[in-house]
Image (tube, rainbow, N blue to C red; front, side, top):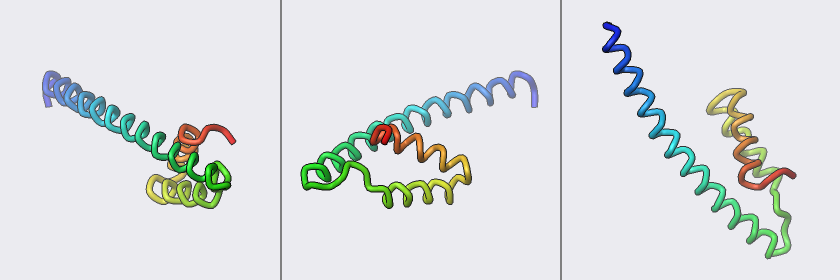
Length: 85
């Protein structure tokens, strides 16, 4: 592989990563909006803002799919979507 070819490969891959990051950010924002609807509906019907067993399910799903770092990622997503508890 020549230097130019390597540089082109890296540039192309970085461009793909940027596109993926934009999509991920958009999906997180969508998740935040959907989570707000769930929380508002739960509170309006007399429930609590946070459903801990649901959060444990989410943590487990991310851990199973991504390993230990998946748990940290899920915690960050949960914090973004519901705020600190």
